[in-house]
Length: 112
Image 1 (cartoon, rainbow, N blue to C red):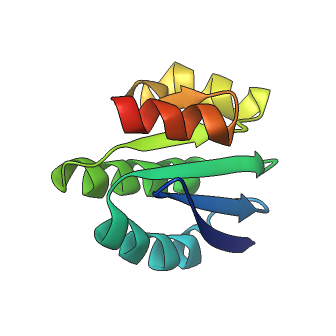
Image 2 (image 1 turned 30 degrees about the horizontal axis):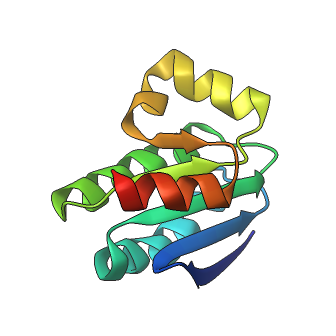
């Protein structure tokens, strides 16, 4: 798994490439939590994440909790149908702003 970070219109955008599972979730968590601590409001582009296990869901919940504790928000873009369905069925999707693309997510976070 590879994680890239960039700034777009003042909002931090995290691009995740690869599967998030029991093996990769701890490393992703270690890399992502300092980003949310520093920036609070974040767009996560998950267009290159083909699979996410329950370990990935736990990581996402922790990420959400850290962001909201800092009065931030997290927007998700590029969710595969499988990940979207899993997150909807478990109620996790309700925690995040879900957008079609990064531009829409950035606009939504800036106005909301």
